[in-house]
Image 1 (cartoon, rainbow, N blue to C red):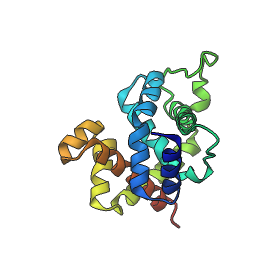
Image 2 (cartoon, rainbow, N blue to C red; image 1 turned 90 degrees about the horizontal axis):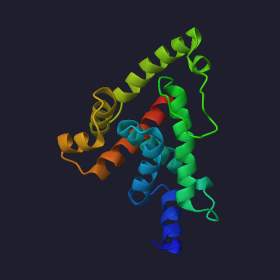
Image 3 (cartoon, rainbow, N blue to C red; image 1 turned 90 degrees about the vertical axis):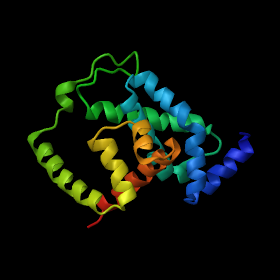
Amino acid sequence: MKKPELLELIEEAKKGRQFEQTTLMNLFWDKIYYFVLSKIHDKTDAEDITILTFTKAFRKLKLYNEDFDFGTWLRAIAYNTMIDHIRAKPELNVSLDNEITHLDLEAMMPSPEQHLIIKQDNKKLMKAIENLPDIYQKVIKLRFWEEKTYKDIAKELNLTMSNVKVRILRARNLLEIEMNKD
């Protein structure tokens, strides 16, 4: 895609237009997914990080500066998302940088207070999931409770891969709104 066409697509996506956001996700999915997979080496985690990358990117799209390459901007978000993912899963033995050879696993373990907060947040999350429309509840449950791959979800729900990605992206956005209520 030529740069002017891409910039026009990005401008429309900034307005919250879902078709343009889906188009951007489809254009850059493979580049981001394989970038993440090359670092994480786990297909399930790579899918999750990729969808979270796009979730964050669309949330921050208004901050995108067209002087920079959009793919590079997405890769930076993906990289930061991978760091967050590694911190959240101390059992992973992953290094994103040759200079980073050891992660302080003890420092990443939740304290007793953090465990209590996590437990309270889980109750809130369960309630938020129950408030989602059925089409989003279904993909969230299949993905995160049953730990099915995007491919398996698409097959089970008779959807395209693109549709599964979009539904998970929208479900995450709706969950975030639900979680921030009160």
